[in-house]
Length: 580
Image (tube, rainbow, N blue to C red; front, side, top):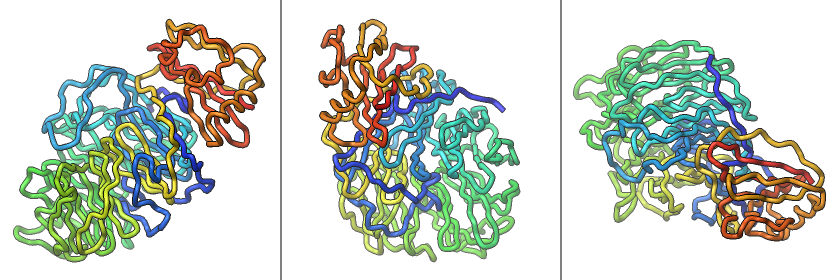
């Protein structure tokens, strides 16, 4: 089985800004292991501690800068948060909100990309580890609004499973050690849109769907070893929906939408039932179950037929509705024009809610499909577009727009937008909920939203966003005292760690004077001369270009870290760690 390069940096490319109030001492006990959560319905039980108001600072526990670009959603297990990105060392076309460009760019970006997996600490946002699975110039296209890291990872608490659609599968243990990988050759997708379907785990199986224009399939791998257990060819064109493992009293089945047919598979890859759903030109929304039914939908905005099907348990064979039928023995109800394009719907209470890309919201009776209230505009004056799927708790439904605004909607039989929370940056990833935290990813940041938190009043440090050479492993603890002397400008050289003149304790004392008692403190060495123990030979005007970062970690053992944030192209970012 192919192997791939692995890299480690505890904090080399992601910067965390902490709270004045500090971080919580209790670890989260709730997990959000896959796209849209454990049930793929993105609904959690009432919890008064979960926030319903936030801004870029209000109720923000921490913010981690994530090198763009990736639209994968964060997933959580225990105290670890996982997500992916694909950086570019050069300029590339940035996505923008709204519906545009029916065709992707057939010519791939001509810059070197780095496909990365990140693991962050849930309580602090600190990067615990990151890995690069490939660094290269892509030879496969994508849509301008898509990314090379749009598939959401999944985890079972033992391993994290990552699919980069044009590369393959990459699996790590929870500490970032490579377990196995499987390269999957890139296939042409409709209109060069690229890939987006996320993997799922059920039992001992890792299940992947890859619908494309050449060779569509569903496959299951042994999650521990990567051995392929089975693979079934699918008579399908490109789709982007994530498969759904539906556990019922009768059996477990894998429900997969398709443009040609909706199909359900058993755990050995055999088709249990199928139906001609006359699905939309673009099938993207992910199935989910509630009230003993599975809901399957698609709704490209220009199509006249945008169906929703509510399918009962226990179906077998061909369950296609006859012409003119809206229900049958196996189909509880069918709506021909209520389907979703990019977003996935949800069921909260006894109501099926649908958020449409162009900013409309609808509600239906989950048992009958009857209209609870018709289409309503989320943003009163329009201008809001949606790709992230909605989520719900505490009697409210939350809809995150591509503009970065979350519309808080009252759940129930009457439509009402209660208020709007703005993060002021483009967002397309669906959030994660873990304990009393809400995790929202925007174009360049990951926010931990937590009731009662206030973001520290200090500027966000700039993270390195270009492709770098292989990052070094964590450095061992250094001497008991150090002097840091940056030297030279040409080549951005590391400088020297010399002498035993200044005890590490003095560094820590000086940093505490600047940072207070936060658990993590990120500062610029040259902006804080109290921490520079030698006269720097670098002219002051050139110092910011070096982009060094000094990190003080308060724990049982205080630690300082010095890092190079902008190395010479092709050089490794330098990093040293010293314990008190």
